Image (cartoon, rainbow, N blue to C red):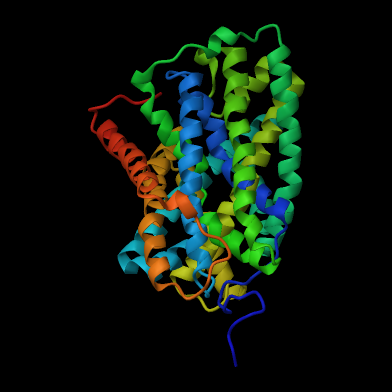
Length: 410
């Protein structure tokens, strides 16, 4: 009996569940708009908003190109695999474990930040201890991850739409506020500029989401619209990444920005804005938790060769790995909010942005499926060289900063 489905992919432990175009866009935005957007204003306060915008544009362009490399690699592979499984096939065991480690580091960096940030926000709302607030956040978050890819896409679309509306209101209210000053946005200092790139990398890391999108768009019969959905999602993400720090820094001045931007920003606008801004923060953390939790879970299934992602026994094991360590680390005092994102971006961003280059090269040589879409001129050696220089340089800066040779950004 043939193992090939009607969608042109083989049956595997990872199931094909349909996604619409806008559910795909929402998953991109929901993944991007998480803890990263909440930390950008604080992380860029010494460097300045112009430098932040510069790095956001550069990072958006080159992480998206890297995502497209992963898109083509998945479309050249009949068996649905997560990004660590693709690396195993085309880069061998070392490459696979390296990418899996990057996925875990990035995911745990996110989930630690979500745990810490959500606990503080819910505590400020209703007066419960932060740890209890984090548990209240975790329960619905983990439930959606348990339900799988389709539930994640539907939930993302609904919550992401609400998030966009909240930000339009808050950014608009900030700009028309009498305390808003465009002068707060004009100063910049390149001495603190490079670490902002590392935070921007973290905010845009979504390569691990590509296999999930491929499964979803394959099941819906609309694979050729997937690159467009990625671009549209990235445009929405950029507007929020640039707009939220603009509103917060312009209103408060860079000296008064909080690590979780919505806390001090909301207070500066008034009670209604405090609750609205922090509801946005909770939604941002939750939507990102869903996609990151889902992709980490399926990477665990793929990397450890679990027979079926929906088998309750294996799903419980994978979900426990997703949820328990980040919660422990968040309340161990070992990792701070912005630092968790900086180091995640430094390591995971480099690995997941650079390794798709050789992965696609080998997929073009040894793939077993004719792709519906290819990268074309974007796979030019100049693009590849720029990706290696930019992201490799970010990692080198992080190492030299840790050694005290180069300055920290905040």
